Each structure stands twice: as structure tokens, then as C-alpha cells.
Image (tube, rainbow, N blue to C red; front, side, top):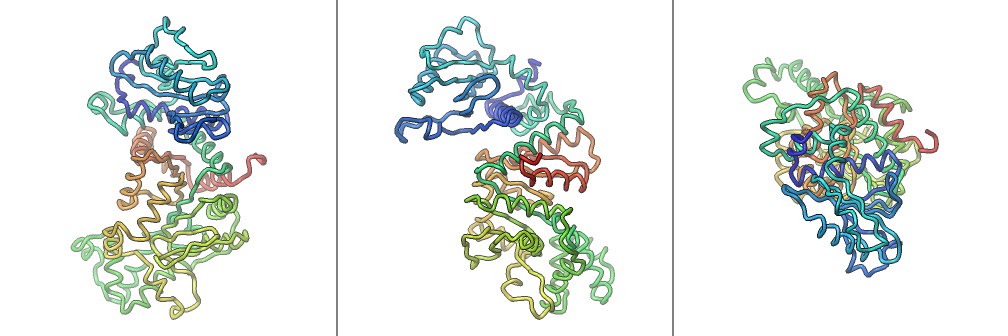
Length: 464
């Protein structure tokens, strides 16, 4: 165990402790906030004197009554606990001058027993969670430990800790804890956003991304505009963006191109179905639409989500270019464009055509312009909200670049992903990978399990 403790540096130790504290609070249905001050009803001093703590649980945590503040101290060498505890006691006493408060020091060092009488303020109770606590946490939260040390790998990690035994049950427990945390967030007043990818539009009728492109290619071959699509792809590249670019270049006219996209989205449209994932997502939106900062960001061109909101009588405002104006209704950001369903190809509006970003040229023009409406909208939503990603592969390098920017600001997001029969070792590597982008994973077995998880998130706590 000592070898595992040595794999921490200051940043990975902080990340691990925060992750564990968050899960402890979730398991007790307690609120905990990080890098914050005591709330106004507890803080009696002027705003310019507010004291920031690493974490605060104002209702307490475990068997510690609230308010409780936490300080995380990492040391390569032995820490001067007398001075640290003296300063923390003064800090806590100043921040909360009229009542009892507990302060928990979390450290990777071993706390000497002889320092137990170092408290200088009888209103402040000092508790130390030292290396013995951390060792137990590593055993209990192996995925969080692996995420932390692999997100900030030291040379020791690279050389000596390339794998770890994590059981299937560990992923189940971690995923359920993440789902519980997300459900509490949805029920709270905290800032929250939904981020939707192409996967959520498949149930109501849209072709999956790869099949949409295949239909483009099949039509071009059928019309003998292309003879051998495989050989052509080998020559010019066969990525999805290049394929879309080729298809746009080879269509007879722009109207036919956009109608082909439209038909790929809507030709197989089905009626509203309360079993679909998109229905449960619309229920979450219905629950959160009164939140001041709740928003929906979608990478989809279709209007399926809007139709499901119509079914629930939720008012919304679809935004899809720089001329779109925000109003008091729920904002739905179509950052790659919007192509609502119409009856005839001649009914597709130019403004909707111009909003679509599908080809290599489209993406290059968009993501090479950092001040665009689409980029600023994504960054704002990622920065200001805890986001739930659903139906997103998270493989788009442009989206990942934006997530890396916000990950540096310690913003935590969640994503629901299917396991696809991956082994525990590969699931752990995937969890490590997404943790670096600031994303916690809720793993589900398949799309049926995805619907079940979304149903859990959209249900009222009182109904569970």
C-alpha cells in the first residue's frame, strides 16, 4: 500500500480526495461544495474577508456534525502539523466566529498522536484523516485512485503502475454512485445542462451517423457519379468528414444535398414513444426548465428533441446561428446546425441550410474561428454547468479540445456510455482517459440499460 501512496503528487492527491469526498456525501445524501466559502446565512463577516476552503459540508458528513470544512494537504516530506493546525483553527474560527465548527485535515502523511492537543479554539473541533484513511480509500475506491494518478502521471506511475485489478462490481458501484450524484444535481438548484449526440435521435427515426454517410455513398454509386467508392476513399481519405465533403461536392445541386440529409433524418420517423431515451431526456428537461441556467446543447441537426418537448408542453427556443436570440424559454443550442422537418425539399430555408456544419470544410471553417457563436456557446455551457453527455461518442477532437480547456478549471461532467462487452481492464483505461477530460462515466450494459438509467434520472426522488 505504501507504494501506491507514493504514486500521488499534489494534484492527483487533491483530485482523489475530492472524488472520494463527493461520493461519501452522495451516499449520505449530503451536500458538499468545493473551493468555496461558507454560505451567507453561516458567514457573519464582510464579503471582502470571505475565506475559501477546499471543501465545505454545511450539514456535516459521516458522524461529524456541520458545519464542516476540509483542507487537503499533500507533502513529499513530513508536514509541520502544529503550525498547519494552528493556522487552520484560526482560519476556521475567523470564518465562523459565533458557533461550533469542525475542520478536517486530509493528508498523505502520518499524523503524530502527540499533536492531538493542538486546538487553540474550543469552538473549533479538529479532525485529521491521515495516510491510514487514504490507504482505506484506495482499497474502497480503486477506480477513483486509478483515475487520479493516471490523469496526472508521475514517472513512478508510468514505470510501476500500468495496470490494476478492478472488479466488475467496482464499475457497477461507481456508476451507481455517479448516477445518484447526478440525480441529486438534477433535483437541486445547481447549474446543469444536457449535451446530446446523434445516439439520442436514432430511436425516433434518424439514421446513425455512419449509415447516413453510407446512404449518401450508395446514392452516388447508384447514379454512377462514383464507380468504386472504396478505391476513391483510399485515395482521398475515408473519414466521416471527408466522406461528407465528397458527397456535397458530387451532388447535382445544394437542394438535393440538403434534402438527402433531411431524408436521412426523417424518412423513418416514428411516433412519440415513452420508452425511448429521448423521452426520458425530455422529462429531465421538463424537470429542470425552471432552473435559471439550465440549457440543452445538441450536436444534432434534427428537431426530435423539440417535438418531445412539445409533447410535454415545455416551451423552448431553438438557437442555431449567431442571429438567434435568447429569450425566457428553454434554450436549445444546435451548435452544428438545425434542419427541422419540412414536407418538401423546396421548403428548406436558406438560413437552416447555412447553419449546417457537416463536411470537412465546414468543420475547418468553424473550429479555426475561436470566437464563433458555436465555440463560445460550447465553452460557456461547459464552464458554467455540470453537463450530462448522452448519445455522444466523445471522439470528436474539436469537442475534446474544448473539454480539455474546461477540465483545467476543475469542472466535473458526466457521460452515459455502453460497455460494449469491454473487459474490466479496458473499462478502467477508458475511465482514466475520460477522467482527464473532467468526465465521470456512468457505464450501462446496452441501450435498454441506458433507457433504464435515464428513467431513473428523470423520476422524482419521492417516487423511488
